[in-house]
Image (spheres, rainbow, N blue to C red):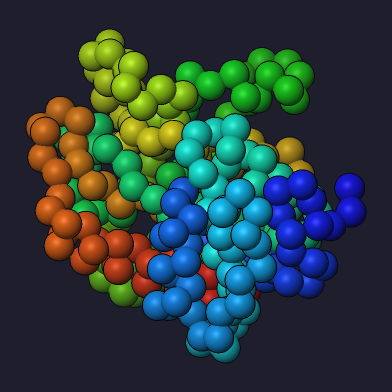
Length: 239
């Protein structure tokens, strides 16, 4: 397929080799306007806003991916397959599952368990593990240590349901060491793996499934700033 695509009006060369992807396109706009230098909007289709600018002289793009695995997978696929993107860092939030998962910590997701059937399209002979890319994961962990940003490194659970998960799912996730619950990482990882590209999810723990704790709006903004610093510095060193 040639560019533009049905979902992205960017022209060839408009998008950087590494893209930061929040779920909310308005969050992508906020990131571009507050963290990137000289950002230029490359996409308005369906209001899934995307921008390219520079961070410390390195070219970086940011674009929304919507909600759920199918949406994240679609936008990631087009970036990888048609726009020459080599790496995507998902930046979002997660509900804490593990006892060790503290509010404001950032999860670096090594892998994503899921109840999604999205990977059926690959006809893999068995369960296809949705895994992060080691170079991105290693660079993010090293960067977090250098910046003194608390991180939890481990697996998450990507759910197809926001409201429908029962206590059995939550308890099973905790028993198997899942750090957090979210809705997109597995789709991103499978898409990257299928195309030989790189992907990593960074997720701020905004609430806790078992304790009922949640961040205030002020704490959410503070935590988001720390995650953004980690994501941008990882992208800078990876580029």
